Length: 155
Ligand SMILES: [Zn+2]
Image: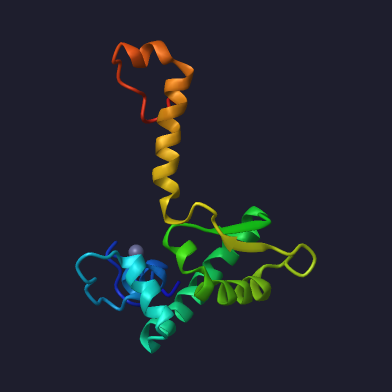
């Protein structure tokens, strides 16, 4: 995003995650016990916390800029905000939309849909569970004799 930007945990500087990760949105504040980072960010945004709202404003703009570059290369017509971004989409989507409309060369003729992913932050876990269930469905006898499932699909 910015070659001379904020140092990133990856060792580089100014990466998208320095602007659009939950850590960036929470401003480095610790997450209270008994809750999760995405629930904390959502609660702070719902309460109108100015620092969280400003961070979400920045995150949405950064996401929109990063996505615009990908959309110009890949010609995709729909963006799903998944994971924590699905929970925070109410505060992110307007800035994502603004950047896409401004930066994607074909957006005026081929509008790009931006919406939260339906499965929200649990999408990866649900996908892993469905993969295992599908393997059992395809080879029920192997499951009955206690053979290990192929968790990682074979190439
Ligand atoms: Zn990085």
